Length: 271
Length: 264
Image (cartoon, rainbow over all chains, first blue to last red; front, side):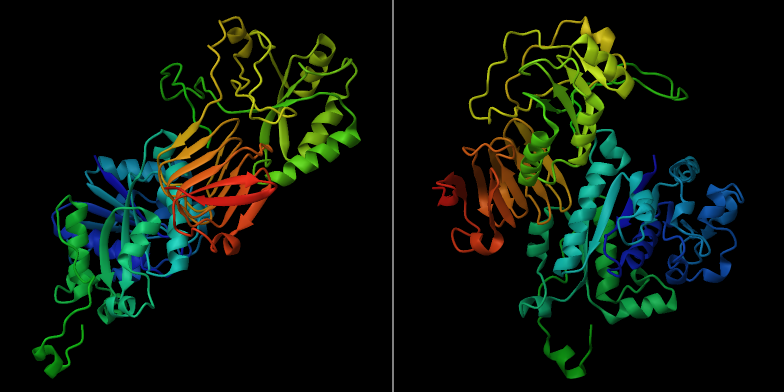
């Protein structure tokens, strides 16, 4: 049984694609056969983050329209043998996604033995985002620690529990909160919402807290999902989140202000 | 989000083009007492102003059981049109006569059987003019069902919600109380014709007595609401912040003003 997980947020620019890339890579690194689908038709980004933009021949919409087979369109990740990327079409728009078409692709992936299917949702609550979340068994809601992002996440959680297929069948979609760009120093100064505040507003299980880190941007630009950077706090935080996703109990890190030791102060090593 | 109470009627193979399901949906009964277009418009606009969110594409059943006078020649299409202007979509007639039923057929409206139980006991809290009742939704198999024994009369049902009410969601408890066991987010709206209880933080909008019941009250564990309204009398967040903010409170209507008391 493939588990379909949508990575969504409502708001744009909070780190959905970065998180999709990191989490799908993390699952594959843990030996799970994983597919990651870019639902952002017309604004294709996942291929860049995964550094496979030059290998895109066929895309998601081609598969839906029967112009290519799923096997032709899936791109095998160069770093993780268990990871496959289904890129979005750059020349079409969101209306190219039909419910039947998406279902067909998801069923075919499940038949192919994929254990996890990560759906990287576009921002907004329109058709594209709706298609990404409709078939989900679970949702990772990505939020930044600021009020508008939290409000939008709340909205998308409501849509998830009322409009998804699971909701229509009277079931609930498993919800997980991933807080990204978290900066404990700024939380301490009162400039940013704290983990507890966000958890209280959203009343949702916390999957992980990804600290704000320059390694994330660097990783994106290099096309290497940040989870491969095992020295960076962000990479470690994603690895923890993946472990939790697989049912392991891992304590949350990077939430409190780090006490800088003498050593790091002397060498001014930044995180 | 109407909760469907009953289950699948049959398990058809997946290739079939449809599946018949039985369902119980809360519906509003518009119990017509008399009819003049102008007065109806006037009364409707007053009612809609109390809870504008509620009357958007709301299905209603038009009831004639308490109609004073003769309604044989009532212009059904005109009535339907007026209701539509105020966001209500008439789906069925109840307690009509044969001449109206002929009109209903032309207008594509379903016919509900008249109440078989004795004169409906008036719910003392509700405003007598417009009393919502829960009725099974008009369905294609309706005529087959009408001969079946009527379900046992249910009291005014409370609606219980145990999952968070998120921003952008709207929950309405017609004819009864609404009980929410999870947070109500900012940007969410909860409405009830009766009382509202929230056993968690209330951060959204809460409208009790949505049909004008002035004895309705709002109870919540932590008052952080954007708006509280009872029978159309409301307070916004600025005013609410002044007293008992983030505390467990009971809000009632006293001499046309909302009165907030701490719960001990």
